[in-house]
Image 1 (cartoon, rainbow, N blue to C red):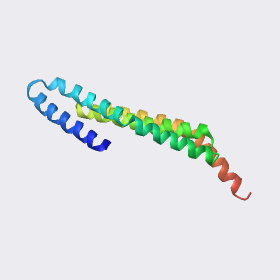
Image 2 (image 1 turned 90 degrees about the vertical axis):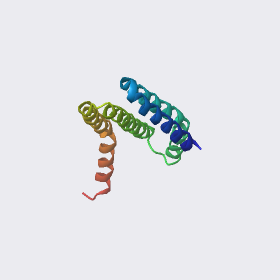
Image 3 (image 1 turned 45 degrees about the horizontal axis):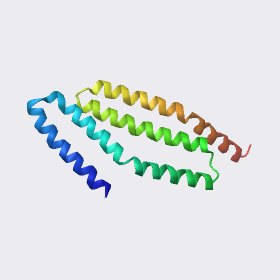
Image 4 (image 1 turned 90 degrees about the horizontal axis):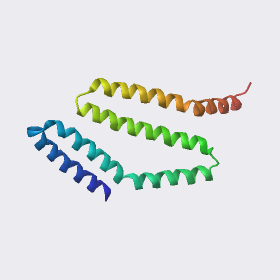
Length: 129
């Protein structure tokens, strides 16, 4: 089970970080960053399976593949920005973390405009005039 690997890696990293903070606190952030990257690499296969399933369902439901691609990109941006925000907060840089959050929200909103406009067009077609 992948979750046991993830928790094990996290606990090992936690112990290393606690020990490092006593002697070389500047290296603790590198361990945290490497741990996050390692965990992301571990779940990549699961992520590929989810994307393949979504593509299969979208093709069966005749959903526009452009919208599915946008949704996957938006989800990826949300996950990556949350990862970056966590790293910044762990290193004591809350101001940078908040800027990342604002920037990612603006990007997500701008990317979702085609989906929102398409939904509005569908709603307007359904409503009686």
